[in-house]
Length: 202
Image (tube, rainbow, N blue to C red):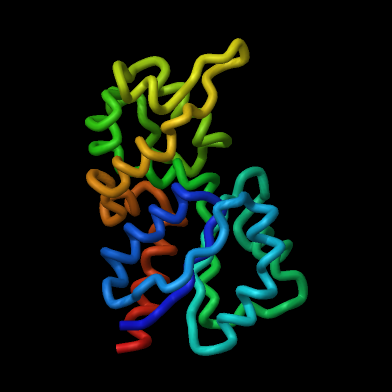
């Protein structure tokens, strides 16, 4: 068993990384969780995370691309002139981790009651995956799911109080990154990198 640090922007991203590790790196054990306070906080800790990765403990860091042009641009902004250590697994969800969840179209459709035909075959091409998810739930979901995920506002639906708990339930019980990889290249790269990290310690 190899200890790793996990650094994420928010709780949902942390749960997604945990799910990926259970499948692609089952011998990796998360000893420390860092973040949960947004991209700015995580970026402010990048030098500390790099220092950890230069030692004996790998760090798996997941950030959302948001409106950056590409993942290398975001990584360059965060790392500056510092080289990225081999043990710093810096992965970027294009454009938000919600795109990875919608990439498993069959299970997302079934869980949230959304017609599969309404789900994009290329969720990473969506400019605002989270807002797309909220809009889809607003139009198609019913009952507790709809009440948990969103609240209605004049300008459109916003994240509900139980958004994270509802999506966490979906990730832990329904979402399969092995299937979602087919429609999310950045997810496939993240899964492959985590699998190789585990292999390096066998």
